[in-house]
Amino acid sequence: MSEKRGFGKSCLFGCLGLFALVLLFVVVMFILAGIGSRNQKIGDHELAASNDYTVPAVAQAEEPRPAKMPGRVILELANGEFKIRPGEPGTGVVVKATFDEGAFALEDTFAVLPDSTWVYRVTYHRTIPGLQHMFMSFMGKGGESKVDIFLPPDIPMVLEVAIKEGGADADLGGLWLGEALFEFNKGGFALDIEKPLVQPIDRMVIRGSMGGLEASHLGNASPRMLDVACKMGGVELDLSGAWLGDCDAVLSVEMGGMAVIVPSILEVEGLPVEGSALRHEDSEVPTPVLRVSSSQKRGEIEVIRR
Image 1 (tube, rainbow, N blue to C red):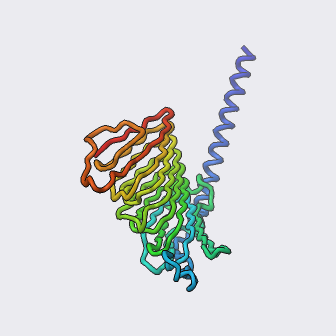
Image 2: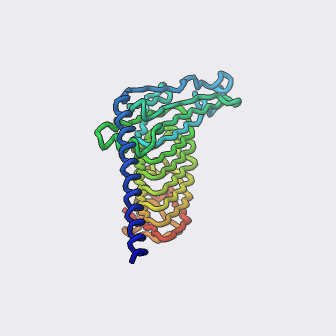
Image 3: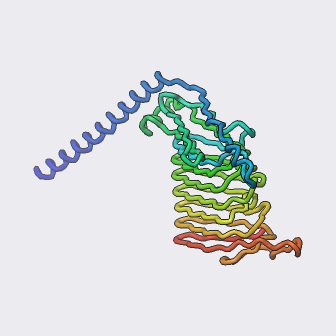
């Protein structure tokens, strides 16, 4: 009996010790959250890349060449709400943000490469521990975290977007994109191509993990190559829009579902299609073809014609 009582006391003291540690942790987090709340400074910020992308005069005489040098825009965004929109011609890349300067950081770099192309990189992330920010939010002091990015429609570019632990809403209609690469992790991503791009995009890649993807009017980008792979999340790909050519698509899903909505004038090869039959609107215009190769692991890809 004495051994059992001793064992019971050990368990009791162990549980009390664990409870004390948890309580101490909570108290420390509330103290840090209180300090962060007192030091809170919500501010508006604006960044802009140089708009000096002009092609040298000799190159301008060569046709066809854009009036502006092509470049690469890299957006590395975390822990916030993000919107990406077309900007005004002639303004370059513009970033407008509202956030707590004691909890988040916004930085950018601009570089011109030896071939006169350029790279503009924007990074945004939280600078305090996630639990501290969570406790600040419980106290009503979490602060705003919003970033709006405007991309120029008159400058050719490659776009790279990486979203982590946040939500992003992108409308790229009317932009001049050679390639677009999107990656999101632990968050949601909404992509819309509301109106046709300046020219068909060569390649569009989307990678997602532990989040949802909703992409609309991708036909307005008329991608020659479409690569979408998502893990542990739901995906809806709406391929409606003004297709100008064929598309080779690689679709992959793991532990989730993917619904691919195709317009009635798009022919599909590689996957069965549910819904209405293929419609030929103009026999003189070749029917655009979507050639699909797919991978489905503990998930399903469904193609639906509308």
